[in-house]
Structures are given as C-alpha cells and as structure tokens.
Image (cartoon, rainbow, N blue to C red; front, top):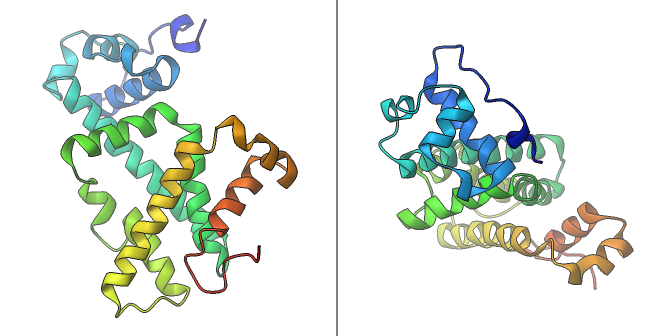
Length: 209
C-alpha cells in the first residue's frame, strides 16, 4: 500500500490554507497520480472540510495551476543551486542535469507543469520573464560562457535549443535502450552529463567523438 493510502490525513493547524492545499495536492500527485486528484481528495489529505478548497480554487483546474506554479518555482531553485555549484563551461551542463533530475524525481509534478503550459500555449510568466527566471538563467549562462548578447535572435534560439535538449532528455532518459550506455559510463548521471555535453551548444564544449 502506498504511503498516502496508509497514512491518516494530515490535520490542518495553521493559517495558510492555500499553502496546505497545494502541499496536499503535491503529495497526492506523487503518491497516487493525477487520477487521484480532486478537490475533495485534497481536502481530505489536508485535513479540512470538503468545502474549504473552494475558498481558494473554483475547480480542479485552478488547483492544478497552483501546483504547476509551485513546480516551476522548485525547478528554478534547483537550476540556481546547480549553477552556483559548478564552474566555467560546466555551468550549462549542470543546469541541464538539474532539469532532467528534477523531472526524474518529480514525475507527476513535472507532467502537471507541462500539461498546464500546453493548455495555455505558453510557459508561465514567472518562468520566462525577469532576469532571475529559469529561462533567463539558461540564456545568461550562455552569455557568461561567451555568447554574444548583441546577437539577440541567435541567443534566443540557443536558449530554446538548450531548454528543448534538456526537456527531450528528461522524456527519454528512462528508456531501457540506454541501459548499456549508463553501465558503460558509470551510472545514470554520467550518462545524462555525456548526452548534454554532446549537444554542442558552444564552441569547444562538445567532446571529440
């Protein structure tokens, strides 16, 4: 039996009901999957009355948007930490690796994030707008590594390419066909790093084949 099925609902004791509901929704997503998520189930998990979620969310869609927002913030924090811990050209690979590992470690949340983005046909504003946003972290890292900030179109395309490369790897990294490469390279993360390095987004960063 999964943890959330076996455990008693967590009682709600503090004043931030919205926060408690979003946290409860995340727990349900990761433990039981999107099909288990409803306002009633979230209320039960948070230890509040079935009517309580309607004070903050008109329907399940609004709740999922709030959960997706939380996910983007978490991803941004993971990318920032990875960049800060790396040096030189390794910074971009570290950002990409943090992205893929986030998707691996939070599969249901990651899916909700992109489902919400596809529904709106746009990345959330906080993801792309502002110098500290996750998208701009990738772009600014490219500039730090030598990309010309005056070549705006090329820089934008390179940023998109890096984001798409990490996203594609996140979607494919678990395929069994890559097991032999993971074994040869010493594990999953060395495999992920090698793939990201082979994207060749910058002169001199692509390993010789």
